[in-house]
Image: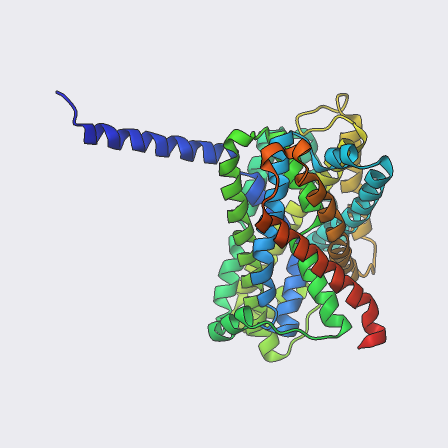
Amino acid sequence: MAQSPRSVGRRLVGRIGRSRLAIFLAILGPGLISAASDNDAGGITTWSVIGARYGYSMLWLLLLITPILAVTQEMGARMGAVTGKGLAALIREKFSLKVTAFAMLALLVANFGTTVAEFSGVASAFSLAHIPPWLAVPPVAAGVWLLVTRGNYRKVERVFLALTAVYVAYFVAGLLAKPDWGAAVHGTIVPKAQLNSLWLLTAIAAIGTTITPWGQFFIQAYIVDKRISIRDYVYTKVEVFIGAVFTDAIDLFIVLACAATLYKTGIVVETAQDAARALAPLAGRAASLLFGFGLLNVSILGASILPLTTAYAVCEAFGFESGLDKKWDEAPAFNGLLSAFILVPALVAIIPRLPLVKVMLLSQDVNGILLPIILIYVLKIINDPKVMGEHVNGRIYNTIAWAFSVALIGLSVTLVASPFVF
């Protein structure tokens, strides 16, 4: 029996739709994982402190940060898809060896402090169950090491995606806290700033924990390792934008949870661990457990990704073999650096009476100060037709990225000058 053109057309459209979905699912990972991993232990702590200390009044920063996060992550992903090279390798090719060495030194310092913060987050999460850091951190560090050095690329990616899905705990915790939605909307659309050192430091930390220097290296290395070509890049671009919105929505609900409970009752906290404890009598045991579980989850994800980012970047910068599917004898520098960046920060995190909060917040501020330097490298490379061909930045992208870099530099200068001016 002859089929009508309409029925044939419907089946053809259905097949095309399914094939596009299959392609999207096949390349799923870089955008979501890269953006979500910015919400690490330091990030959760920073946004928890913001909610507890400033209520809803700093939510407008999230509205500002989200499109910038999308633009910066997309630039890194596009460079990886077009060139097949990581950011560190492109910096080495475009600039001098001295510039490359400076970029790597800055990244090493920032990443080390941030990785210590991740294992500090692990310690903080387990302390909610009265398990001491020396007992909790080593097994987690061993598990992270086994995952990233013994698992192949596909297995590691599946674990990362599963950890990303657990961020939903913060959405639930935020809803259980019963926030004031009117005040939240007002704080989102009406900017309010304070000209004092503490507020400026907090703002830089918020930016530095959401849009990170290491995030630029990670997403590009991830694209290269996953072998995503410019032909299929449109799907990755969509995923990058989804990841940016998802990430900052998590931050929104963290602020909502803390503003609706801790800020409202005048409880001052310094850590996400303190926030989880304080939520119990105010929003219920479920909200407290979800907050603590989320902290453990993000800490493990960050403790896995930061060492990976560091190993990728340094090996690309100096021409060493790298890759998750490479064995020890094939990539000794990559695997050695990866192992060291798990072991040493884990040991530092269990030092008795170490000021973990200061380590976390300082690492975010270092990220915020170093970020414009890395973005300037990115903008120089991505606007070079010799490197990117027809895929150079458009005017809108350049305007957003340059304006953000200049503004962040201005914030950093203001922070340095604030003790003498304000």
